[in-house]
Length: 124
Image (cartoon, rainbow, N blue to C red; front, side, top):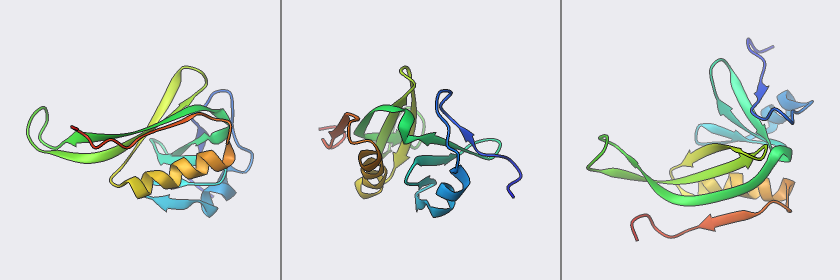
């Protein structure tokens, strides 16, 4: 039994079998991608965003500054899952292949959700 219970990020939607979905979920970077939800580390414990609460998805190539405001930047792929009408949860991945795991899971669970993939390289 975990020390802290998992909590849903969405106020309108939660999962009954979140623990079993979490155990069966695939690990991608620091996240877990399950059949019903995406799990991410939070304090305290773990939070999840059920795909049933997702309204739209945007994937975009971006960069993360290493030194602050200027200088070297690491290329990343940002995936924003919009939920409950006005909120979003952002997931950052180093490679497009990692982001595709989450995007494919959302598309499989919710084929009606609009999915925007911007694969333009950052800075182009």
